[in-house]
Image (cartoon, rainbow, N blue to C red; front, side, top):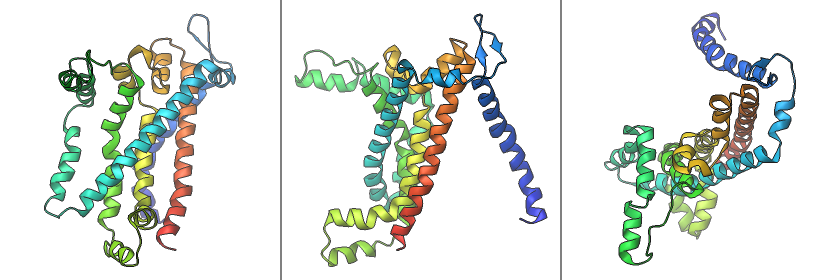
Length: 281
């Protein structure tokens, strides 16, 4: 790095240190402290907060959050890959329209989108109206305030984050490879697993991170769609800071969340490297 490039990068480095490194350092320090009987912070270093996080009461919330996040990521991939392929193979004049339709929900506020999903899944929403009118059910099905509603909200809000990175990769793909594979007698499943998936692997890895990391720490969607019955990791951390006022324990939970995110980045680098060898053997 030359002296000039180092000077140009200095503002960015200061920004990262001030708004990323220092906040994480403060969270780490607080996670090693104790909370007194009256809510005061006791400046004594301890690992009790991390041991407390392993309590079955909190550990099951952590596991449930991981399972729901993994399910959301898998569903986003299962829907995002064919959607991205459809947009990438569409006529050029239709691609801007299709991408605009994909991004259209982001023109509205996040809270408004979540409440719209709640209304759609509600007892008087269009889904229940169709079910009752068709005679499939006699009474409206309660779908809100459940893990199902949370999963639907996660999927609806984070699907574009999976679709767009895959589309960017597939748009540059040489589609004559698909014709060559078909001419050689490859079936559609073989073409998918041996041609499309390896080529789209960089987009899949990027999309997986863009979905997995924010969903794991999401608290607004579970709070609005899951109700009091659904407690996930993001809600637990928020509750510790804002309601219980147990900042050390909330900081310890936040640090565990950061460690999982860092492990996700490391895994992405590992698998991403293998994916690159698949594309260029």
